[in-house]
Length: 175
Image (cartoon, rainbow, N blue to C red; front, side, top):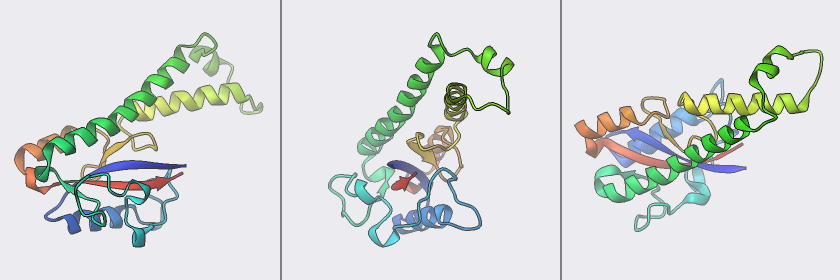
């Protein structure tokens, strides 16, 4: 499955922002992010099927400097963060369901027994915990690659100080 993530990057140019994204997420000893099997696709650009996300820009340069179009940048951030909050709410609905009993999940845990229902409940709980703790997952939507967090606070601080150095780079990930 493919998902687009908006990377927030501090750089001196669009090219530097793209290079930073490439060097940070390219395979090394360990995949980064661990949930993606993204191999590059660098010849086709980082945005892949989301190329052209920033309407009115050169379709081969899928990067947006925040100060070039702050309204569009904020709209994109808001849209992609909404995917994260949607997943948080879906996970919460599952946890609030009558058959989801966290205490029972812990008390009846048995590593000798494969219980698919319990495993799925634990997966939902883990997924929610990762999203709430601003961990980078396939459902994060917007990730501050400079500060290495899904928390937007650091991006906002950089934006207040040096808005012309803040870039949005969409990346087509696969998992």
